[in-house]
Image 1 (spheres, rainbow, N blue to C red):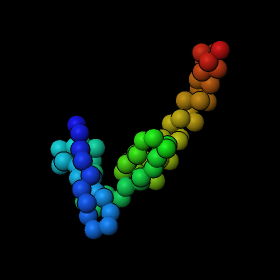
Image 2 (cartoon, one colour):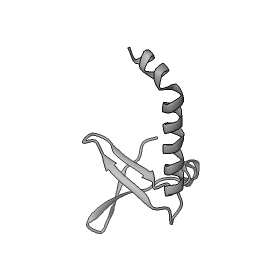
Image 3 (cartoon, rainbow, N blue to C red):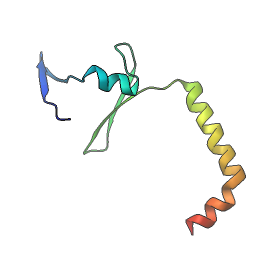
Length: 75
């Protein structure tokens, strides 16, 4: 999908189609995080803290249970 920037006052805007926004769960009131690595602009919805905390717990549990396997695979 190719898009062009649209002038909005003194700024530029990127208009995204509704099907794309629906696919990633972004609506008009969704808070977004915008970041870059110097080459790519990344726009992502800010997820609830409970979801992030749950993910951290799952990763910690996987590391506790399978840490040895992960180390052997990394060698």
